[in-house]
Amino acid sequence: MRAHLIRILAAALLVSLLAAACGTPAPPPPEATTPPEATTPPEATTPPEPPPGGPSGSIVIVIGNDPSTLDPQYADDGNEHKINDNVYEHLLTREPATGEILPELAESWEQIDDTTWRFYLQEGIQFHNGEPFNAEAVKFSAERIIDPEFNSEQISFVASITGAEVIDEYTVDIITGEGPDPTLPARMTWLKIVPPVYTAEDPDRFAQAPVGTGPYKFVEWVRGSHVTLEANEDYWGGAPDIQEVTWRPIEEAATRLAALQAGEVDLVTDLIPEYLPQVEKSVAVPGLEFSWIRINTNIEPLSDVRVRQALNYAVDKDALVDALYGGYAVKAEGQILTPGHFGYNPDVEAYPYDPEMAQDLLEEAGATGATLELIGESGRWLKDKELTEAIAAQLEAAGLNIDINIVEWSDWLDLLFAGAEAAPNLQYSSHDNVLLDADRTLSALFTTDGSQSAYSNPRVDELVLNARTETDAELREQMYHEAVQIIHDEAACIFTVNLDNIYGLSPNLEFSPRLDGRLFVKDMILND
Image 1 (cartoon, one colour):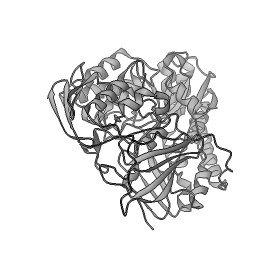
Image 2 (tube, one colour; image 1 turned 135 degrees about the horizontal axis):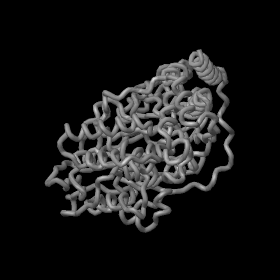
Image 3 (spheres, helix red, strand yellow; image 1 turned 30 degrees about the horizontal axis):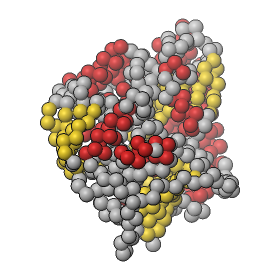
Image 4 (cartoon, rainbow, N blue to C red; image 1 turned 180 degrees about the vertical axis):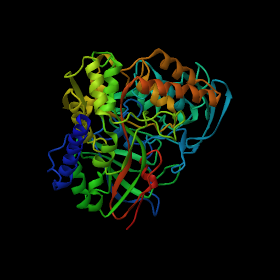
């Protein structure tokens, strides 16, 4: 009877959240305020001459928040990534639909020994400021992102790299000095190559006015208002179709909808499901994004595994999928990996919704009535604030007191990467793993020294570290399976849902979502 009542209350809350979202009319976009002075790029050394019949038209893409930086190697900030994916390039890339690894700035590559991968580079490519792209640029980029003093939040993407060596102007070796890394090619689809001279001479300016080799060049960043890029008409891969793209941060879902309906924007990411019938053109595809709640396992009562298990039993993931996301999500099967990720454990299942078990475990641990702070943010991911509120209500129904604190994006990022000692009790987050290998997820989120971790288990540390250099695929997979099982059994976080990617489009924009969810404007077409 008690469990049935709790289920009814939790479902009622989700329905009320959904009704509120559906019933609130979309307000017009807020009136513009006087923007701060725009950041402008350095002058190009050789301004390009526009080719005849070149790029034309302009589009506006909505992102959730202003980027925290435009340095492509520092922050693990999805808003920055979306923009800089169009300015910078990588040695390798992925085929949009299948995820197959393909050449980009490197024309070919090979593994020459256990710890050395050799890349043969494209010749004749320049950065937007005229600096040459060559092996020195690759070496500089690799060594910069792994420099402990730089302290990149992206370190889990490149964790195995220990250095780089120039062989000749267009040949470079990437070194994984602590052992072989079978995922190194996947890591090279993430590492962005930066211009050494400009980056080193003025790091502050570099973080505000990016310069890459990509199909789009930086124009300006008016903080809180927009970032504008223009087509690189001398792009080595051929000039893109669209001349100008502006990235506009809009946090509120209703305001995003209003802007799309008014024709002010052309692409809205994370369009909420209730708004799909109200837009002329949309597309939704399964995604890699997992919403999850980080638990600081180092403090009482969360250091007690029974309390952490109770948190997982208290969350009705099926109700979240149906009532909050309208079916545009699936519940996480006790891990933050999709079946397409190497290392996914098919034998691990989601914690069932069992509020009575949650209450019993809390009582057994002496934690009934405990007060926990839950940190969240708003606007970056699909229904992030609403999910935080719904989970808080379900935890309270199980017998806890939850203080929700929705903070600004930059403050949220600071807390996520502040280290285990400074981590709040609970923190909403979202994680996607475009490397498609468990190492990125497990090392960042669940090892003792992980960049986002507030959990520690020596066996998990050992398994993840050993798996990184294991070349026997079957043995490596077994290591990941064991680590995933431990993380699940110890309830290292609250596992919630895997989100679909939902996009609202203007009628004239042609856009096919990628498997990895990245937004490459060069692959978009704007019809007349």
